[in-house]
Image: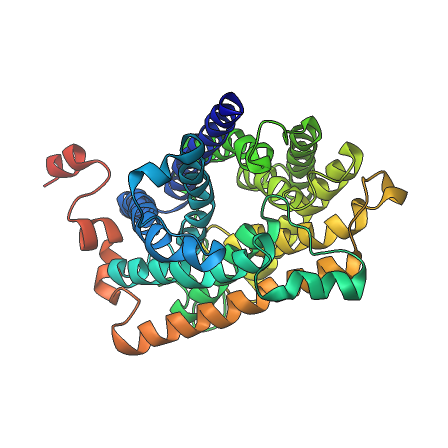
Length: 400
């Protein structure tokens, strides 16, 4: 029994380390997408958000979700080789993905400290409230869904709990902030702001892709629960997302590398119940969905979501939650035990909670302390305005 506990601790700890590494992927994806004058800000935001998320989740969020706190003696924390602690670490890396996702949408014009406050509130209250409903089955909502539709809402690795939540919270932030200076003119014309560094963007995508196998596979949270089907479904959805975005995006490298992430976002919910062929289809559809939704978002709806976090995480996450109820059915090669209506209701529930929580927090911050850089600060760039140093300080000093 002790050896089994030790194996589970090691297994979950490795999963936590892999998902922790994904946060560097979030950072470099943003660094490669934003302009050079905002690259330092992207790096500092991600590591700061992770740090405040750790404190918020340790002190408040984990208790909100699971009714467990760590303000007891270390001898109690060491029970079962400290499994409760590594489980917290693993689930923390999921919770901290919320502000990391939002960061990409609000890039280049958000004030630093108000966003730190928003990140703290999301990880302490909004995210764990929905996490507890789905994964801890708080408030009896899962039982009610099962009694109405024959199955509980199923989200194995967080298409809705993590990604859709982050994406729809990101949408509230982007709308509340408004577009970057010069993105759209008074006549509604779109002015392109190209990525600063495609290799960094690609590096960020690759780091996220590799870490995602810890995100999905190790959501089993025990050695005995590990399933090869989760790994292969994740792989198939990822390549499906790449190919779907490749075709729909006409070979654009930004779409291709984000297409991989779109496929992985979509497969999280049903990666343990779908067939690999179904997972490929879900991923390919997500890749296409991202391309078209990002284009509409930026060019027609004039929503300046810099990294496309709402199309990528919000919409593809919602698609994944619903797709689990379709491709998880035995008739389509799945394992079964899922319901389309349960998935639809659970997905809509996550979206509603994110919209209410996001608009409430951002509107309060906007009306009290402000959430946006001044025109002068935004023009100068967040690096110099906030952090007083650029990405290449030696070169910049040489130009003075």
